Image 1 (cartoon, rainbow, N blue to C red):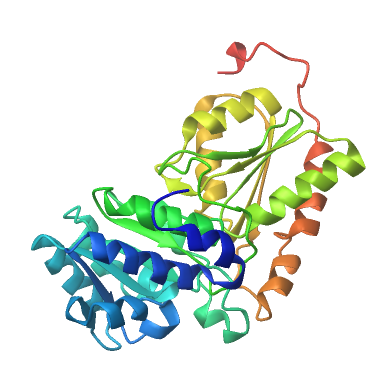
Image 2 (cartoon, one colour):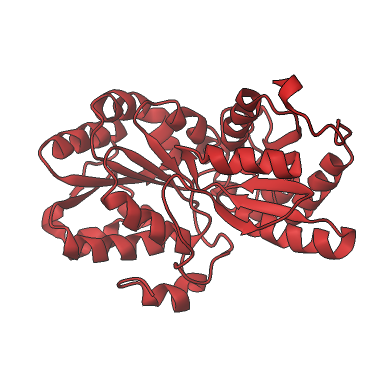
Length: 337
């Protein structure tokens, strides 16, 4: 068991990703005296308020002023602090995009941004509070590392790992009570390295965030009902992405399908498509997420079903991709490069 996180094994199923983030940040605050916390009047919603109560002299609420939030964070980082900055993803990636890009990323400052309520997880709050563009925006900023944890356990691992990882880091989490996949934190989390949930030879599912749980469930059902050998890769780090694992999957399964709670333009699927194109290796490929539209309004679980990023949707899409034809018997790819 890793240091100081035994509580996660027992309590992760009753805590949101944000609540786990608040707990872990408090633990880290005891070890690292240069950690400071900042929020823009959303300390309770983002759970960074727990850090603020424990370390009031190291916590700053800038009010409803997201651009100032990231500008002040940049100044604190220049002074040697490690700012942990939390607000909703839509305010980070859209309202304060210029300050994140120019004040933080341009100077390659050591700011850690934990953005909550990402994707469609805010559900009934409406389309204005959904954030289905942030991965595309954040991965386009030079120097930025982008992490999308699968669940609360992986959120704890990501928060711990980013403290000693130099440079700006964007960690994207949901609103709360996303399904948990991991039972403990000792599964080999490493920034920039994919986690193979399950090996397989017929097709590879590449996923991140809340879709990891559903992909693992779908793979079990597809094996039982269809006899399919499905590989599942949790690409928790979108940037820098694990190119080696993706190319290995192309060569060994030759069918790839990606799932994400994000617009299909610019997110995980696009990052994987870029690697496929640059590899020169042909494969059947489909990316699944929010299409080129603003997401509908509804309960998160209903939206996941509507956009086919839950267990049933993943099963349906995998069966579609398995029906695609390509030169499966052509083992010599050198002439395709």
